[in-house]
Image (cartoon, rainbow, N blue to C red):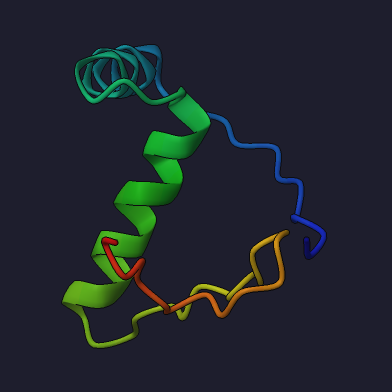
Length: 69
């Protein structure tokens, strides 16, 4: 897994509280919610971020679907 960047972020307490409520509603951590919001904002201005693909541990191709047998 690629190394993640660490960032110190200072927020107005009201902004943090709103993010925390939103994160709880979506069953995410505040950190994951901030990343979600940033990705959505980047996508909305035409700068989407490609997610790195990680191969499954069993060695199968990541985009294969089960046969359903």
